[in-house]
Amino acid sequence: MSIKRYEQLSFEQIEVLREIGNIGSGNAATALSSMLGIRVGMQLPQTALASFDRAISLIGEPERLTAGIIIRLSGDMSGMLLHLYEEPFAAAVIKKMTGRSGTKLNALSQEDISLLCEVGNIMSGSYIAAVANMVGMKIELSVPGLAVDMLGAIMSVPAVELAAVGDTVLLIKEKFTIDTVEVNSQLLLIPSAQSLGVLLERLGAEL
Image (cartoon, rainbow, N blue to C red):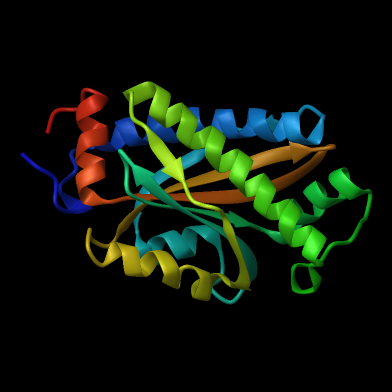
């Protein structure tokens, strides 16, 4: 059976996607450690296949100021990645890289924006590399773009993508420890329905 909408996924297929979330997040944490030059701790990520509205409620208040790194996927997988950084995460990374404390999302400098885009690019690249290696797919990433806005506004971008595949996203909630400070980020993986079918088939999940 070909998959046309996320709602058609079986329990087994959902579990396979959750495992992808765990492995990809581990790779992303390793990449962040290398970039910052310190050991970055990570708790086991929480992975869920959730409706769009439920995903927002799991992430936080729609009015909360958030930084979103948007990356398009092409090649053997089409779709998008959306990395969401809370202010403590951005502040911890910028402090480690520049020595400056107290970074606020509503007052990012051009240097801060470039740095966060690079962090998003490296973490997303490591995540996708883990997925690509698992399934033997060649996946290309676009240049990352950063938006700082209310969570609900940023989430309107993947909402457009979801219109074609159903009202469901793969949400991965990550908790890192940077210099003893616990910080959170969230990753949304939104492959096209066709790409999702190929991905599950390569992973051996029956269609």
